[in-house]
Length: 126
Ligand SMILES: [Zn+2]
Image (spheres, protein in one colour):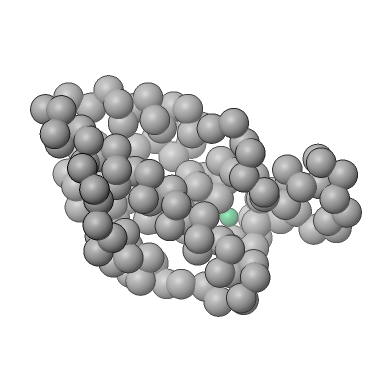
């Protein structure tokens, strides 16, 4: 939310010489945190699958991360379910960031189903 992860754009803003700041996954926009985690077409599809899976309303992927956390928090469920929704949300953000790093540093791009299965399998300690 504070835009602290080391995306190409934030590194450039910190003075690191990065000639290309475009998203390595879709190539259609600058690589900012909100793009990787929410607005990238790849991220949008992951969120679609995940919200479908945990049966919550589709999230607004055109907003920002602050809005995402607020929307998640506003979902009307009992506190136990809300904890699970929150944990899955954090897990999804983490997996999207990891998928980006695999692409940037290892050159491999996980297919949609693989990352979605990964998110579903990871234990959520609640
Ligand atoms: Zn993208």
